[in-house]
Length: 162
Image (cartoon, rainbow, N blue to C red):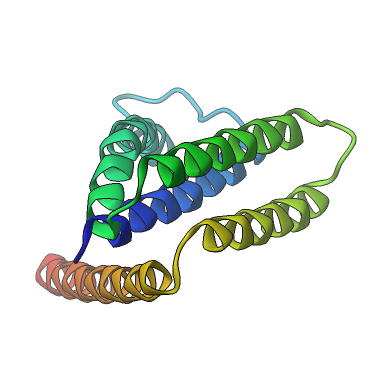
């Protein structure tokens, strides 16, 4: 993978994680009942919080990695940083808008992601776009493999517990 592809993949991953975090934050759950030890909901909240922290950490490093993979020029890096910052500001504004329903927010976030994707592709050369597509496909394959391993471990765990 070249530097630009990695950078674009990291940017796409950050966008995806940012949107997922936004969606997770918009849903309001009832407080978990206080019981002895942690409830499943409390465990999930702790895990989700750790996931968000790691996503923010990887976001910065992922962007650097992707810029190296795609071989971005300094001008491209500057343009993409501006696009990313603009997207984050709009997403935050959308998240804080209490006049919209959850469905409306989801639709607007989808439109924002598409707009951002179009802007990012406008900055990249044809070769960089191809490399980014390859990186995304590889990432998708790795995620699928992880999912299958997780499901296999989970199914093995439930059969031994019963």
